[in-house]
Length: 140
Image (cartoon, rainbow, N blue to C red):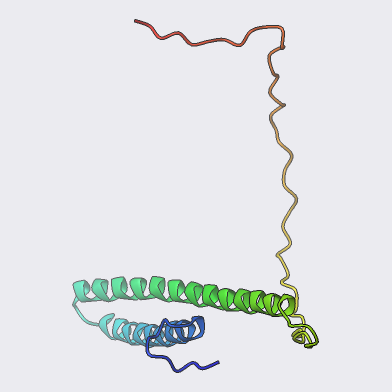
């Protein structure tokens, strides 16, 4: 596929590349802020140190969001490949060979979770069918 497009968001791949570059820039800025914080620890400027801490915190949040975005874009890219492969396999003309399937990816291992606890409350008893259901009457 051609990744050289006019806009950084014309394809999933170009958006993924853009987010990766942006994430790298944020990581560089975060390292610079941490170095500045180390220098300011010895100075008598507590407000500047607080501002640097706030900047470091916000850069950390931004870095986490960018990493999540990169993973989402990667999932979208995988889903698109899966969908187009299935579509290509179902729409092959007569006499043409279907596209070869890619090697299966390793299954995603889910974390071992403890079993769900059983409900502690007893089931709610339903009113007998012989009694009419109560009706609400508006006062007034």
